[in-house]
Amino acid sequence: MSNHTYKLVELVGSSSKSSDDAIHNAIERATKTLRNMDWFEVTETRGHLQNGKIAHFQVKLKVGIRLDD
Image (tube, rainbow, N blue to C red):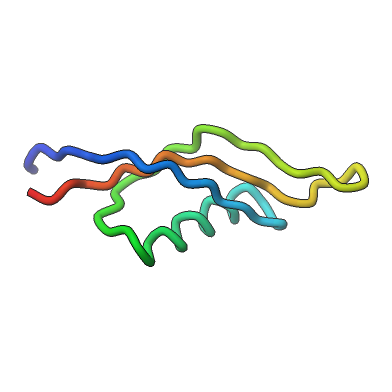
């Protein structure tokens, strides 16, 4: 295994279903324009309330993009 260098990109995913779904939405969308994504870290979780109920989950992620050798 060789040594790798990564660039960090921040993403915010959202979902009306769950925080896990918000993570999946962010990663799925990012794969359409970014390559070499190797890992993610959830750095913040928040939500939007409407009439006392959760309307949306929002999750901020740091994504590690492996730089080409």
